[in-house]
Length: 483
Image (cartoon, rainbow, N blue to C red; front, side):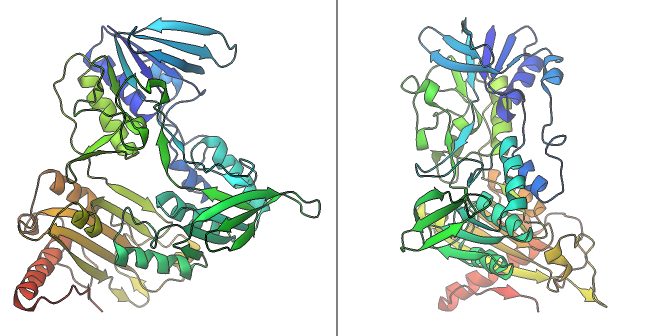
């Protein structure tokens, strides 16, 4: 069987290698437009913070390594057309521009995504910046060395992260968010407010509930570099050296438009075996939908973790449907250089939107301090922000269904990396574990906390307390903190 994979990043390479393992007699061909594979865009923030080399540590595999494992990897070959009825595709050599046609028995679409970019003015990688590819990182590093003021549009994970990096590198930063709170897809209001306070303490100007209506480049000889002017829905005009756009991604699904079913944001709809509505075509990664069991819907959720899982599942099912993909729980983690945010599942707001009778408990646990030194072994004060910080803590929000006590989501914030909690709860959500069931699980003892019980026992206690109060007098939720 000839299997063609369109796209040589996380999902595509994962699928190719697993097919080689499962079905060694199959012919596996991967087409990739660029001259590299497996670029990890999450390396960009680490590079800009000086923690990682974008040139030597941003790829986990080279074309030579993949070819050596028996995969026919064809880099710098752009797929220009797919004919699902004929089961053929056309591709072009990006160097010679020569075009060719090839047939397939099975096709795996792993073409990834591209950044949303509003159709307004700006010179890409000069006054307008994205965070997707290696060339973006190099352009941003050059910009930081020359510029003084940046505007970041969009306060999701990428927007918040780049805003903080720019501020730490001594730039004036304005972060604009159309919604009332930052990170509203990932955090409930109180958790988002915690992060907003953190950003404001670091000198970042927040413009919330504000839309950007336009931006355009201004070229004047009196400046050493061009500037860009941003106009907002509140008629505010902001002149800066550059604009960073982080308003989400779109699926690269246009090659199959009209040939298979598409859904949320144009993503290719797949079943639990990663098959499209064409039984010869599978789709994985950022160009396809992801099924979320908590909300009972196919959603567009571009996410590296899901891309790997989907690529592997597609490979296993390439001959026949035999392995369902585990549901996504939307598990994310990102470090803001001394401040960690992670989440899994759904927020309280999302839970209620989808019909759950849900509640949330919150706990903030501080770390013991003796003689100015924090006891907890994982506190590493390596950033300029952390060197002067006195209050180290973890803040945890648990969302659960009131009647069944089923766990629906977890959000954690803190000045140390407590993100392992969300991996635990992600598995709990997949297995429909309840709060009482997880309370007495055997986890290692975490010393150095004001309350040493462990997060599952503390949260279970708060859930019982909330339910008692709710049954007695309907009191509103209150936050709990050890002083």
